[in-house]
Amino acid sequence: MTPLSVSALNQQIKALLESHFMQVSVVGEIGRVTYHTSGHIYFSIKDERSTLDGVMFRSNAAKLRFRLESGLRVILHGGVSLYMPRGSYQLLCSHIEPEGAGALALAFEQLKKELSAKGYFDPARKRPLPLYPKQVALITSATGAALQDMCRVAQRRWPLVRLIGVNVLVQGQGAAESIVAGLKRADRLGVDVAVLARGGGSMEDLWSFNEKSVAEAIYRMQTPLISAVGHEIDTVISDWVADVRAPTPSAAMEMLLPESNEERMRLIELRGRMDDRLGALLATKHQALSHLKEALAAQSFSARLARAFETIEQLRQGLDRQMGWRLDQKAQHLYRTLLDSAMHHQLERKAALCASLQEQMALSDPARRLQKKSAQLLLEGQPVSLGTLKAGSEVQLVDATHKARARIESIAPYRSS
Image: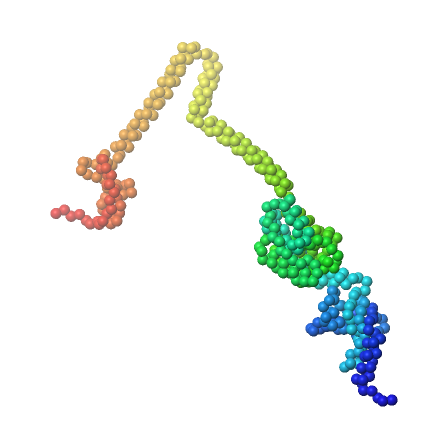
């Protein structure tokens, strides 16, 4: 027998393996996993008694919807080949699916777990929606039914809002990239709130909203966002990252926009309550003003004079009762006459006193005491002598008929010649 080289033997084994095991399906548990920078995935698959190396090259790895993790039970599809340099055989995988759960469901749970650990779902970072939004960006397909539904609800509930459409792909190849670009564009518009929406569909149809790139774009947005994807039973990653999740696109507009008729009724009710409170306040103020008027009237001169006369009358009546006699009509007239005379005499005395004071004030006027062709010198209203003044002082000169203002230019002792 002619001996074979190692390479020749490996070549024959490789041909034999690849011809006999072109398509196989293997179930097992993932052992070690290495994601290479080249894009290839190297791993091992094992069961209770054996271990098998496997590889998934970049072209197929790019289509894998979930991430391989140690301990994950999977079903691998591919062929067996020999790696010539080491003489070891391995499974070349073209497709991998999780055992039991579907690939998309597993990918969803893996991404959800990863983003939750990073704080993407933290309720503390959720922003409240504006009460009365003026501008709303609708991130959805321009040809989809979701856009028409949202516009119809907005027109019915709150016609004052301005809707700005941001057209994106919501399904198929390139949809995730289109959604990311739409989110960034909506964030630059300066709107009050944005709505990411599409109608219902299968998990595959809605998968673009489960992509990590979409979740990261939502997380970085400065504008509050509502995620309204699919039907009420559908849940996607964008629902968890967004500030608010709506079960449907129409429900998003119901949640976001006030109802115009309800707001009108609320304003009418508020105005009624305001009118009632204002009326009650005015009534209280009017009552307080009436009390002040009564108090002021009670302290007026005429009221006090009336009370004085009433007191005098009461004293007179008391005096009558004590003395045991009543004045006849003539005596009453005499009494009134004497009282009026006393009051008149008192008024005359007060008038004379006022006249005397006026005369004294007139006599104390410096101008009256001045001789003709002379004037009184006043500083700040008080008589002064020239010796007390300084240069720059402002003074008044007063005679019997005139007043004048002057400024002292200089002061010097007076020496008669």
